Length: 242
Image 1 (spheres, rainbow, N blue to C red):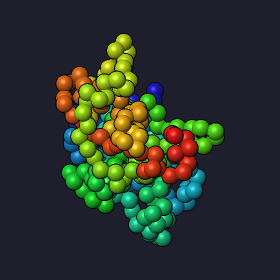
Image 2 (image 1 turned 180 degrees about the vertical axis):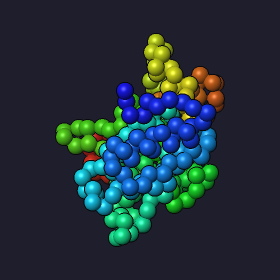
Image 3 (image 1 turned 90 degrees about the vertical axis):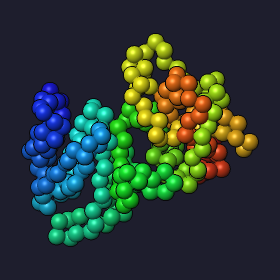
């Protein structure tokens, strides 16, 4: 049985409490507080490894189990990166931000800030909401991740893009029930990423094919999108995606 396969009770907080107990026992955590905040969202309020057990991979392993659980339940995770605390063994905020980014968290800031979540926080959406065919792209031993692209294009404005223009390039999975389910569950609140040329002519959908399919099936005239040009990316990303 997988770690997160715990019995449902009357509410998700009961399930989270069971998960917390399992993670603390498995990884030797000193503190772990996870709360249900509603709307398929949970908050990681605290995770702390006993100082004597730090630098042994316990925190990383616990986070991997937590995001695995969240993905299996379709849950968004929100947290506030801590600050440096030598008494607890925590490092600087910038290092904590980098740590959480390893698990798919992004900083909730900039043009795409979700005000319902609040500033100063980080958020990780379940993998079902990041519907691009790939999470990373590789060429000649160089790799760029989706998170890299999101960081590079943080200041690219979100536009309303015609779904008619997407019909010829969007991927389709009409005979795949798993992909059809992902289309149905996709969240149109988050913009798709479209690679375009210098004249903003579409080349391909970099991330968000499921969202695009949902918008087309629902006969929506437009969808939120970021139009990304190679000039928006760094040299390595241009070499890989160009």
